[in-house]
Image (cartoon, rainbow over all chains, first blue to last red; front, top):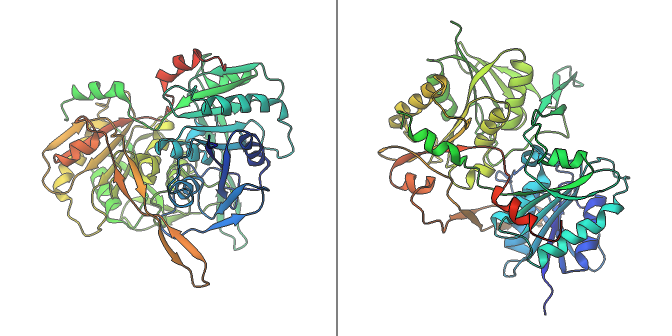
Length: 253
Length: 253
C-alpha cells in the first residue's frame, strides 16, 4: 500500500526545532512533504499574499525529506503545497507546528500555526495544529511526544470525527493526559510599548496580557492549568447560528 | 447626551472611497474616530504585527474628523484605536469597510476588513464589516447607502442580538432587501500565476476561483445572487461543538 502523504508546516519558520519534531514523528507513518515559511511568521493569522509574488525554494534541511521554504505566510505555504507542489496527489493529513507558544483560547485567531492548519481543513484535509506553552527554543517537550504521535496515528487511522481541524496545546511540566474541550472565552489586554525611532518619530510595539473571565472548567485554558493536553475540535464556519433567528424578529430586515 | 464614539477602519487603506462613505454616514450618528492602514492590506486576515514596531500618524483627510493612519495591519489599527487613541473612552460601535470586493462565504477568514471588525467584537464592541461585490473604485453603490445607514442606526439603538459581529455584503445592481443568513460553505481553487523575476528566479502569484458545492438557499452567496444584501451574524468561537462528544468516545483520550 502507498504511504499516506503528510504535509508538515508551521509559522515559526523551517529552522525552528518544533517543525523538526513533527517531521520526525510524521516520517514514521507517511511520506512527508515540508512547506514552511523561510522566516518567522508568528501572529500572521490567516493572512495571504495578494499584492506581490512569492518564492518557493527547495530545502535540504531534512535528510531524505522533500522540503520547501516559502517567502509567504503560513497559509500561502499550504496553498502552494496543495496546488503547486502536490497538484495531483491526495494529502492525507496536515500537521502544523509544534508552535513555540500557546495557541489556546483566542490565540487561535491570531496564530499562523492554526491558520495554516485551518487552511488545510478548508481544502478538506484532516489537520492538526500543535503548540507548546513555552516560547523558548531550548525547552524540553520530549515527554509530550508519545501523545503527539498517538494523535498523528489516530488521525491517519481515520479515528477522528467530522471536525477536520484540531487545536492541540501542550502544557509545560508533567502531563496528566489529554482533554477534549471548547475554546476558552478570553482576550488580550494590550500594553503597547512606546518608544522613538532613530529619526525621533514615536513608535508602538504590541505587547499585552491574556485575560479571561470564563470560569468554566470545560475549556482549553482550564485543561492546560490542570496539566492536561487540550484538544479543541475547531472549524471555519464563523456563523453565530443562535443570532440568525433573533435577527429575524428585528424590524430592520 | 454625549454622542456615541464610532470607530471606522478598513483594509483597503485610508484613501479608499469605501471608508469615506462609512465616515460620512457614521458622522450623522456619533463622534467618529478613524484609524486605518496607510496602505492597502487586503487578505491580511487576522494578522498582527509582532516582529517590529508600528507607526501611528494623524491624518487630515477627513475635515473635522479625528483620523489616524497606521503602518500595521487592520487588526493593529483596532488595537491601537482601543488601547492608545481612545484609552479611557467607550467605543459604542466599530464599522469596517466598505470593502471593495466580496467578503461572503469563506472570504471572511482571509479578509482584513472582517478581521478588524472581529477584533473589535473580541474587545466587546458591537461591530459591522461592510463589503461591496465589485473591486472597482469607480463603481456606484450609492443605492445601498440607505441600508448601510439603517444597519448603523440599528446597531447604535442596540437593536442587535447577542452576536456582536455582523458580516454585511452588498450585491451589485438593484437591491431587493436584506437577508439574515449563514456563511456559505465554499473554498478557493487556486491557480497560481507563475513567472520569473528580473534575476530569472521563478515566482508564484496567488489567484483563484471561488468554488462551492453548498446548494442551500439560506446562505450568504444565495442571498447575494438573488439581489439581497447578506447579513451573517458571526463570532470568534471556533469550537466545533458537535465533535466534542464524538471525540469522547474515542479511545485515544
